[in-house]
Length: 207
Image (cartoon, rainbow, N blue to C red; front, side, top):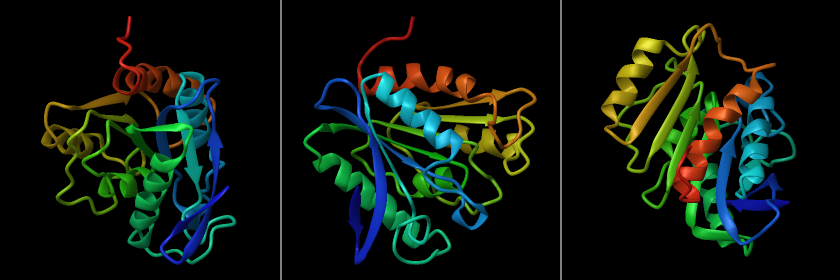
């Protein structure tokens, strides 16, 4: 499917749960200049988990990536793409627009963090790169940050300070021995994300 981001047309895909209407989540992919797109393994893992839990997942390609129009905009226009994806998701007949989350991996996590809005019910950042400029970021909804303590692009100390600065609704899970990439450990990620999404989008307490 496609949707508009300003004058551009972006391509995306939906993972649908068995029953709709349902809560929804937008998932943002890693850096397009380094091969990142909506078919990334982490993006796929998040979308599959969401759909299995009864949540509609929208993944999309940022401008200039895959079949999306436009060119890479150094993270500026990409924030508009996130806003457009959220607006599109909220209007889908399959989605309960009052229960929506936003997630991102790597570059996608940084862009998503800068594009959060006050209507979000939950936020997830996987392997947020502290090497990217992240100033004056704020998240009002429950937020989950997941990273490896040996991430080449995310300093654990800096990430800890950032998450603490966001307040009591933000939590950080650091996985020992894990770097920036999640090949072969996607199930570990899914096991962390699932109860968070179920709690904040479905109202299901973790056991």
